[in-house]
Image (tube, rainbow, N blue to C red; front, side, top):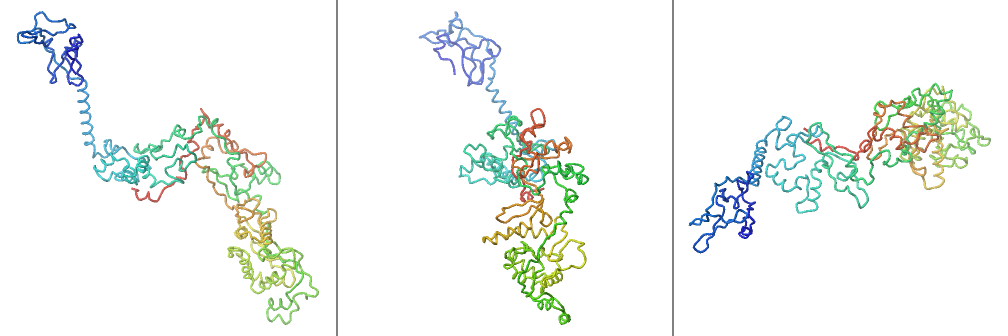
Length: 638
């Protein structure tokens, strides 16, 4: 704006014209600028020192006192200033130059974008305005090159789609909701491109929740998560996609950890042995007691921990060697000495099987006329056995085991069927007593002829003498019992019988329930049970219901969101020192701990501490749960 006449009269000279594009040339040369300044078209307005005013018939000089007051010569007759000077050369203002530079830069940018719009990519050393950079190696085969639309839906729609996407951010999110749904649109904007990520990546929980799970509590800061919070692309083939930092972890977790050795919560009381174990092995008793005994010292592992643990592949859990390597030198003989007794001929008070019945059933026709009676008469009968019925057969026949009057009819009926049908009679009785049992595996290798011969001897109140000697493992009738002899480790027949009996539902009837429990105790006894399986293997399930034997050592799932690898620890200190540095023998075995002291925070902080080995969150923790891939990802593979 120009100075007002009042200001000129008050001696307040100078001009203020910030909106004009010119400034006085004298001012640019550090001289005193003229009062009126340049005109709008850039002409100097300071050649005359004043603008005379007409008063009646004469002109009066209006030069202010700040510039010397009225001049002596006064105005001319035509009203022109009588005191003039050479005009200056006005210059453009800084605002004009800003506009010109901005316009030039904008034009150059547009020109560069248009010029490079069809360049290939930065890998050819030619930058492209449409390619932000090469993808990481992990994504290059699935979303690279012409498949940009895998993540960017607008890619295949041409310039119009790009323009629309620029003004409508929600359309950048694949699978975005209706444009009219504001809440859904806001959510889509918060999770831009995340929907494209989860078409290939799968997790063990909600994909867009922090750590793939919903946390309880009203102050949940991590509800609105999205993939781009931690993952960035187009930074090069070998640049990591993940940018999760220590500070980012601390923004959500209320418990701040500055120093692992001090601030990290204490581990569980029996960490990491709190889970159930498949093998009931006590390290303390073996290493500190049994292996030191003179009679087994030569069979003890020579390499201590490495005698049983295979450290070659490292990993979260160190694999165990097989039974033959670890245990057979001490325990194989004990397994073979514990036979499985399926049928033990019990004490019989009232014999209902006559000698004539035994002779007709068991002897050939030509021998029946000349043969004497096959057993004593009922008048002077005295049973060949004084033992009670074994618990397993009592459960199968559903009879009491300790009173001959309660079981002898069922047992003698089974003996008649065995004399006639051999092993088929046992299969029928077992199928009725054990529901859904694998009959073909339970009696695998049992000879029907041997069963008939043994049944005929027992029915005749005699002990059965088996021909030959039991050189091999398998079924064998001898004396007053039908046994499975000399079992080996992992014997399929013994295992099938144990599994079948443990899988039986517990009866509601008290007597039947007691018979089932007695049969289980007989079969699972650690001292007399077949194969002594339960001396090492543990049970899962309730004693009042169905149970299973943990035959195999299974890798347990790690604590959620954690990871651990033995291999770098073994490489650093060596196996012998590393094992005992963390896994120290306990004075007495803790429940499920295998005779080892729990690992504490202090155990780890011996190395993982400030100014020592890395101790940040990502050393042991992961963000996602159960990461995986969807089959749909193969549709985009190049």
